[in-house]
Figure (tube, rainbow, N blue to C red):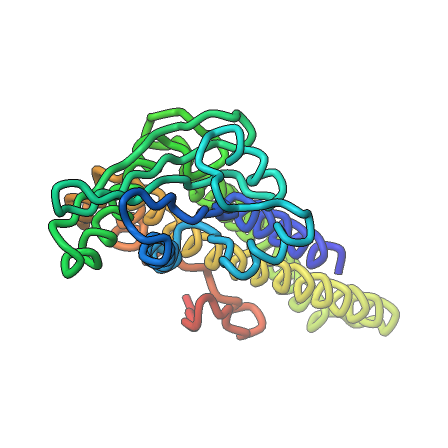
Length: 314
């Protein structure tokens, strides 16, 4: 029972770390300032940008209604908030890590969208992006391209995760901790399973030896003692077999989870995402080359160990 609690505790801790590491960035999008364009149209374009960012499924985007309610409760006005200092104050009120502020203007018949990502904690504008629509009919595709550029810039500059500012591939990557965490749990579990399996084998050998002596015993006292020892041996073997099966089960599940998170870890790289993933990428390799590594069954009591839905008997 203690062993079961230990493995459940380890699994819970690793899962908690995985969940924490994948926490999405909370972003607030202010209504873009209207320049030589109606406030209504600028608001509609702001809403299009907000919806596209929500559909990107990379960040937690604060809904406009929620923003308005919070700002109203705090007695803060959103209109006219376009500079960095104002954006920082808004971000603190909204509990956002980043704020997107910008403007929409008409120039020479074209509609120009400009925006800046402001880091609330640092109080600085980290980068800006611009997109140009030839006319109103081109706005939907322009907004979509603008948001794609915005998300790409966030990834490139490594500000999507908790690391912030580091431009290396791993910077801001939310999948590293669960990938290596589940790998460690998998190795620990398979190692524990191997140890418990060795104990089962040793107890089986002792059981067979006692069974031979039991059959040859002539004295009732000796036979009774051997029978009691055999029962104790069998109980111990059943306990270790259970621990082994749990270890292999947790190891198999952790192994698959590690493969998934490594896949996501390398897919998170913008350069790799641009060219696509292939069978030789890390994270794919465990599934292709190591999938046959499955736990050994319990042949002592003829109770198969079930790992990820597959029953194995050696």
